[in-house]
Image 1 (cartoon, rainbow, N blue to C red):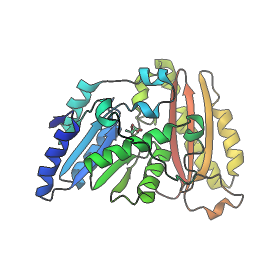
Image 2 (image 1 turned 90 degrees about the vertical axis):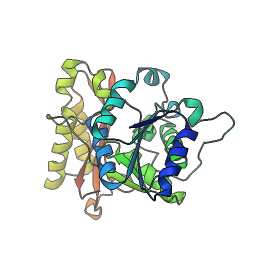
Image 3 (image 1 turned 180 degrees about the vertical axis):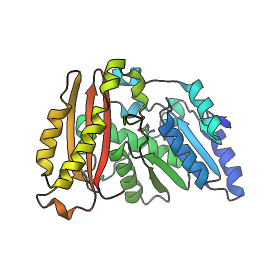
Image 4 (image 1 turned 30 degrees about the vertical axis):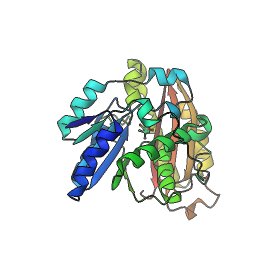
Length: 286
Ligand code: PAF
């Protein structure tokens, strides 16, 4: 595996590969890699000749300094894991390489309200930072394919919207969430969970599954949301939202929810000191 820390060095390498018409797949990450990230890498390896994974804890998407400081950083282990699955290139730039002083990388694009609710409402400015860094990496790497995890449902939809609005020539591929045996969605933040809280964190997935059953039985989305917020309010847990939305627009469902062909439940819950998010399509497929 090749390791690059500088933009110009990575670009020189990729330019040489492109002379041979080799296709490039890209996986942006903030490190602390787990099996979910490695699934994206493996998918890219199967579909491209060169796979690039970046590890960069992006400061512009954190709205709390404490969250940025606490974000787990395990670059040594990450590089080993990437090499083990056969990733071709790891890109670990410094902040100044991603955001060179004097270069305006901010984006002003119409996200069609996709950033207004759920994570966007709870973490103001978060998606501006995500779109900014992903666009910057796309400009640098210019991959054919970009791989995003379904676990961050709103994020992958916003990146697809960004690609559409800016008419960028990249395909965005969403890869299903990988779960622990008990159903907890893999996340870099899981390592921060208190062991006793970790045991009970399966409540997120169980609540999503039960919401699906209730929707199928004909319960109204509003009533399911109310039930879910109560179900998630266990000792040590504090739900921020449980929203059942149209899977394309992220808008709440109208009363005639049978009109929606893709319905997704998304939730964010504080599990002790750690904020977890998860989602489940309740009807239809991505
Ligand atoms: O999902 C993440 O880890 C980050 O938001 C991303 C896409 C790598 C951008 O920093």
